[in-house]
Amino acid sequence: MSALPTKLEPLAIHGGTPVREKLLPYGRQSLDGGDIEAVVDVLKSDWLTTGPKVAEFEEAFAAWVEAKFAVSFSSGTAALHGAVFAAGLGPGDEAITTPLTFCATANCVLYQGATAVFADVCEDTLNVDPREVSRKVSSRTKAIIAVDYAGHPAALAELRQIAKKQSAFLIEDACHALGAEYGGKRVGSLADMTVFSFHPVKHLTTGEGGMVATNDARLAATLRRFRNHGISNEARERQESGQWFYEMVMLGFNYRLTDIACALGISQLGKLEANLARRREIAADYAGEFRDLPVLVPSVRQGVVPAWHLYPIRLNLEALSAGRGEIFRALHAENIGVNVHYIPVHRHPYYRERFPLNDGAFPIAEKAYEQLISLPMFHSMTAKDVEDVVRAVRKVLTHYAGKGGRTSTLASKRP
Ligand SMILES: *Cc1c(COP(=O)(O)O)cnc(C)c1O
Image 1 (cartoon, protein in one colour):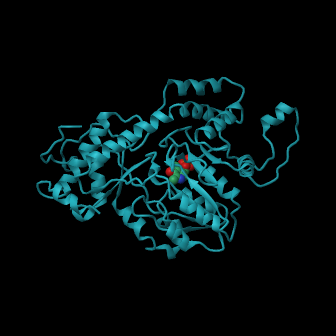
Image 2 (cartoon, rainbow, N blue to C red):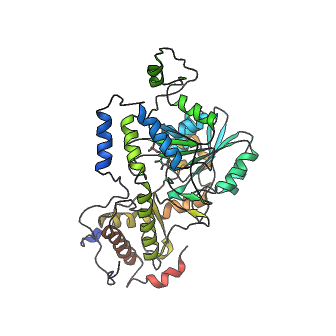
Image 3 (cartoon, rainbow, N blue to C red):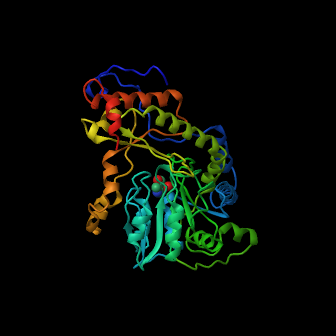
């Protein structure tokens, strides 16, 4: 990535030539012939759902994340619902979580009739701040739901302490963090339950899909029943034992993942290491290229190896002549498919109407939201794709940094 343009070119948003001809998305899946073959094989088999591929995927996944059990779900959201159910949350109970996440993290608490209590985030990682969590703990706190924002694990050791003192469950929403490491261990067994998503923008995809990993056999059994209507055994076990009898012992849902999806998951799992390695390379390239620009790149804490689901940069708006909205549109015009993660959950109309007291209560999350832009980050990005992103970010920020691109003097004003 040498020979970057130094003179100011007209921005595409102002009628100039875009950096790329075709839009580069912020995230996308990588599928190969092996993935397709694995799915086709299941289509020709006896079981399309709840057959042998489910257990095979769950066992392989559990081994990969170094957990004793893994229970698959039809989505990451269903998996979160399962975790909150297994933690025993109901009306009158509270779960403390971060406002800077996808709304599903908080919604799953509401599904159970419990209350989501937000706590502000840390300035460096944008993960929930354990000190803020401590301030929000009450006798009603039954769970802490930490999110590993962008793929950087939350402060799990501190959060585990708080949860333990309160006899609450620590649920880790690791939908961004498959393959991340914390204190030398992969996420998967560091919380009571660790939740993953297999949506196509995530590290591993099954189309839709999710998983809960746990070391607790009782939680795993509850999760298995919950995803199958609350029924005490599965159709395949009944067929194999020649029994018709089953009992529904709790009110569950149909949150099962199909054999078709699990076959894809098994095949994708084999490529996860390469996927993570590529994401880490891209993150290192970005961090090296943006040093002199008025942006803050993600920081990494000691003892952490992030999984880089996202690469969110924060704009130093004081050093720029345009706001995030215009810079976002300018990058899109260059055909760089940037995104914003996230509109803080409490600012969505549904939450505003029900929890009006939350307005303005999370200054770090709210300030970050005004500055955040997620750059493209996915396994199959080529060196040319990365170079295009770097060129576009440089072109747009240099333009808005003022006349003549005074970026080197502005770098000292980074937030
Ligand atoms: C993707 C995601 C989810 C939801 O997962 P789905 O599989 O789309 O239901 C939940 N939480 C976070 C943080 C996510 O990124």
